[in-house]
Every structure is written in structure tokens, then in C-alpha cells.
Image (cartoon, rainbow, N blue to C red; front, side, top):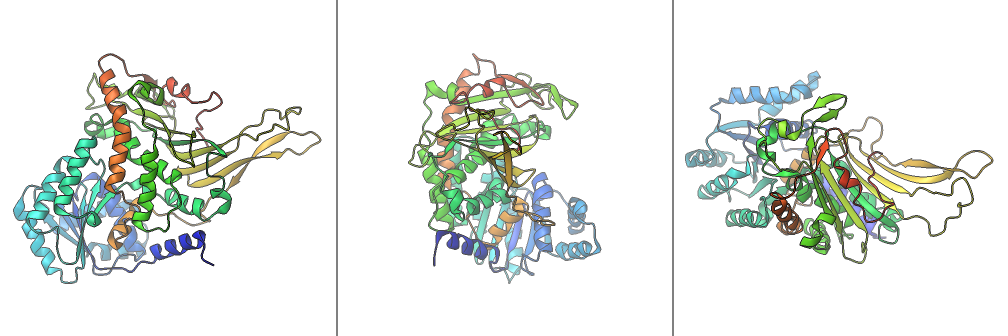
Length: 507
């Protein structure tokens, strides 16, 4: 019998057993932080799992005047924490054989021509991946030079991977998209949001659509509200030159948190085909209730961390961080309330929050269910019954928990909360890193977990009125401060639609 659950399971099985294909993988900005901390470890793990074709070549394109041996030393340094056994050392030797090094400035057309000549020599190439691990300010330079040298249409299929941010507002996002489409078609463009590659986020699809018990409760009739939290205990670190121009709303809410909202709220797709999935997410984004300019202070809250204590150690305030402007009004905390005006979610608030220097590092989705329609225990010691919660932890713990009531042992009718733990990892199992999943999908041509431009466009349309309002208030209203090590400004705890709603901070 063909059921939606069966189709979902078959699709996931096919996704994990896709055929390996020859590929040339070019990393622009290969000596940068992203490549060293995310891309190289992810590719090495795929090598260890034998998930990439034997004849795949990795070309590092960077400005440093390094030899191939110097580059390989850099790779070894980047992976030193990953190598602990003799077997891993053997795998590393094989991994290093894949590399080529191409020195060149991003505006040096001759370097691109040399890259094109080298790719011509890779006779086994059937597809080429260009990964832009570079600052957005040089996107246009690289894209134009790829087209000028014909690298946007090499042998087989070419793909280009663009890291966030996708613009800094709606107009710049459209400009970037137009630039990409001048050289690449939509099927070649992979807009990456690493949150969608996280194991727990992918598990949401299975959790919802392969379980009748869960899907039947997933609507306004049973759910009181939804909370999405991405909290960081760290400060701005060495990203101040970037972060001070962006802020929490652009850096986290516009992409990561809104994508999580779309995955939670979407309708079941007809299949796990990339466009089927993304069509359903776009429907959610189109259904988000517009926030009018006179309502923004009721729907969005910002804050900036001041000095405080994190994990028992003193933490400086944002304005005291290196490279931060002393009069900066950049928000390091943002909370936004959304309503989705469709049949499933009518009048159910979705609360999104993110911030730096918060109490702990955690990413979680907390779904609170409505109270029973009749309080049968009002004449007992359990007269005030706590609500049921479903808790989906993305990081650092990866788990799914449901809180229900059970009677305590004894003669009385007292209840207590019992947690049903549905953690999907068994003993000795390890989940894939988000980049490992997404890089494999890029190599295999699976666009399911990547973002289509209409998703980007709709997200900016939702967020931009808030950005404009905060910009207008910049000269008249001070940005609220919150002490480092707290859960954000106190205003964020006094802002819920109902007085019996509050933030869920722990599992």
C-alpha cells in the first residue's frame, strides 16, 4: 500500500544511496576560516565514509602565493584534531592526493583562465562545483570572471554555491540574484543555509510526516504557540567588522530562524523533490501576517549585550569589543513574533529569538500544547495543571522530548511531569555535521535542502519593515541593554500574546 509515510521513507533511502559521480570541487577563498573549520573537515569525513568518487579533484583557489606542498601542510593543520588513528592517517594521505592549488587574486582574469585550462585536463570531469567561501563584497567579481572564462559552462554540469548573507536587504538580494542569473541558471545555484543540513532539522520531516500521531496534532486545534530559540553564549569574537554592519536580525532571523519556521509550519509535500519541498515553504512565508509600521514595537524586540558574567567569567559588553564602534546601535539580540494566516496555523503565535552572550549555547524548538478543555483536577492538589510540551533540541544535544502528566505513586491524586525521550541516536551512533550533509548533496545534485530565491525574497519582505523601523528609531530611542549571561532584555519576557505564555529556556 502506497502511503505518504512510505513515500517519505523511500525518498530518504534514495537520497542516502545516490550514485557517486566524478566531480571537480573548486573552493574560492580556500585559505579562509570557513574552509579551514567547515569545508575541509566535512570533505575529509566524506572521504573517510567513501562517499565521494575516487577521481574527484579538489582545487583550492586563494590569493596566497603557496606551493602545493604548503597547501597540503595547511590542510593537515586544519585536520589535526580529526586524525587520531593509523587508519585516519592512511585516509589523510589519500585525501591529500585529491588537491590542486591555484594561486590568484579574485580580480585576476588570467588566474581563472589557468583554472579553466587545468579543468580541461581533468578528462573524467562530469560536473564542476564552485564554492564561494568568500566575503559577499567579492561575489560579483568572481561570478563575472567565471563567465568571462566560460567556467560557468564547463564539461558536464557546473554548480555554484553561495553562502549567506544573500544581500543585506531586499534590493541587494535581488541585485545578487540578477547577477547570478546572468551567468548561471536556477538549477545551477545552491544557496546554502547550514541549519537546513543539521540532523535534527532533517529529522523534522520524518518526525512530522512519517508519524500519524504527531501530524494529527500539528495544528491550531492543539498547539498553543511555537518557540524557536538560537542562543549563543559567545560574544561577537573576531567577527566584529562584519557583525557590526549586520546585527542579529539579518545574521540569524532572516535566514536560519525563518527557515526553521517554514519547515515547522509547512504542509506535507507531494514528494521530497526539491521544488515540491520549497513550494510548501514559500506558501508558509507568503502566509506570514504583515507587520504594520505602528505595530512593530509590539511584534519585535531588540537588545545589545552589556558587561556581565558567562560561565562564571567576566564578559565585556558589546561596545567594549574589538573593532566595534563606540556608539554602535547594532542589535545583538532580536525577538520577533509572527502569525501565519492559513487554515492550519490561524492565531497561533510563533516566537523567534536569537542573541549573543546569552545564558547558554542552545538551539531548540519548543512547542506548547493547549490545556485540556476541562480541568478535572481542580479540587485536588494538582488543580493547576502544567501544559504539555514537545521539545526538539538541535544543538548541542540532539533530541526529541514530549512532556506529559502522570500520577505520582501514593494515595493522593497528585501528578508530575514525565518526559518521553525520543532521541533518534542510538549508542555509539554519530550524526553527520551539517556541512557534510550539504556538501554531499551539492556533489550529487540534490537541491532539497537548499534555498530558492523566492524563499530569500519573501524572508526579506517579512524582515525589512522591522529593519527600517529600527533605523528610524536609531536617533531617538536608545537600544535596550541586557547583561551578558542573561536571557536577553527584560522586555522580551513581557511581550507574549497571553500572560500564561513564557519562554522555554531548558529541556
